[in-house]
Image: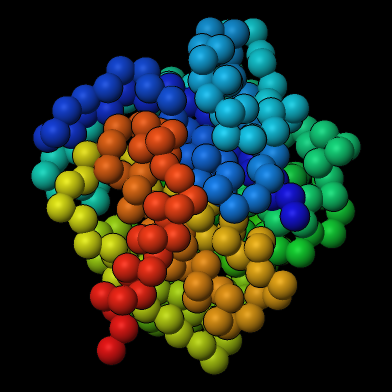
Amino acid sequence: MSILVVGSVALDSVRTPFGEVEEALGGSATFFSLAASFFNRVRLVAVVGQDFPEEHLDFLRSRGVDLRGLQVAPGRTFRWRGYYDYDLNEAHTLETQLNVFEDFRPEIPEEYRDSEFVFLANIDPVLQAGVLDQVRSPRLVLCDTMNYWIENRRDELLKTISRVDYLLLNDAEARQLAGEPNLISAGRKLLEMGPSRVIIKKGEHGVIMLGEGSFFSLPAYPLESVFDPTGAGDSFGGGFLGALSREPEASEEAVRRAVVYGSVTASFAVEDFSCRRLGTLTREEIDARFREFMRITCF
């Protein structure tokens, strides 16, 4: 099975109460690709500038990520600078430099257009719709978004959501998009917008998933050390879709199992800054934590 991801590859400068990094590898497509690569082949479509370090490309290739869809454009790579206080659920942006990402128009290579699983990472919903116009007949499309698009591209976002299978967003975004303070009510409203499942991330409080006639709730894996939550959501998406792509069908049991794999993969990503932990992680560690997660949540 093949997984296509379209999103950002960036250089992040992040400060938390536990340390900081300068111009480290980041971006939604990056974290997703690394997380999903533990389960299946990943095809990445994004753009970087001519200043993007070759060592990061080598790192992605070492994880088996197909970079034929990665454009290298004249100019500087997308950069984000921010910090977290002890409330690690909230990122504070200090600076965003879109650079070459400002003119990004995803062109899906012909050899990628038969991808069976598609992740529309957090980009303009107009661009997300353009990706859907280029892929042929994927088995499953997972879509992410953020508050900026909800505020400024609502009509376009609603059109895109109506075309996807699963919607992935955090609790604040779910409340904002649905206009409902209660997350369960918000999830039900989001289902009415078109997707067959809605997955709502709640940070350190776990995740809930709603479908037609189904509801699933999972706590976050308990961690004693969290260094950098920047890539947690996209790592969840990668672990989730990667695991689901290994299943013969998207049954209720299979999708719930994929949610657990997504949560487990994200729990590793936050244990160090940038993508460092995903770089040393093994599938054996993921499976061991998956079994431990089952043990501590079963009653």
